[in-house]
Length: 141
Image (cartoon, rainbow, N blue to C red; front, side, top):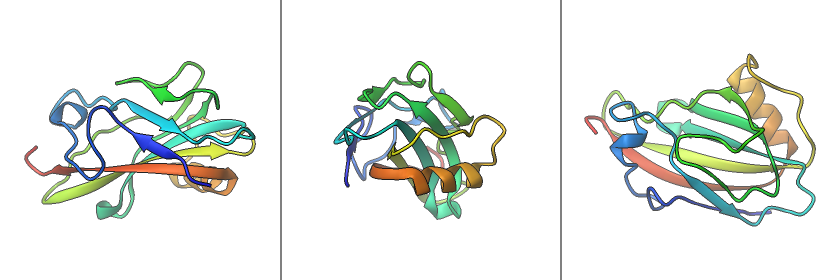
């Protein structure tokens, strides 16, 4: 099943504003989504840089399945941050950043201290739907 993810900060395939990067405030951009299945037990967000071997920039789970967005620079109340947000900061060139929202069919028992790769694997296995928006960021901002 597919969900739609958008951001008021950047359009799909477009540059992510500097404020959300290591050269700015290093805060997460606002995200919004639609298409969450009624059976979802919780939501999760994973941000990866596939141009840097899937470097992990953010992992959050435990988001209420009735939520439709996350605020700029934060997570919805009750969410569990597994990997703190680290904004785009490519060493060279232009990198792509995948902001994926997962609808999970069951509540997960993973929290801070869980290794990012393990958390992401658990999230992906529990996902009943997902959506993604990809933004870019160039070295030098």
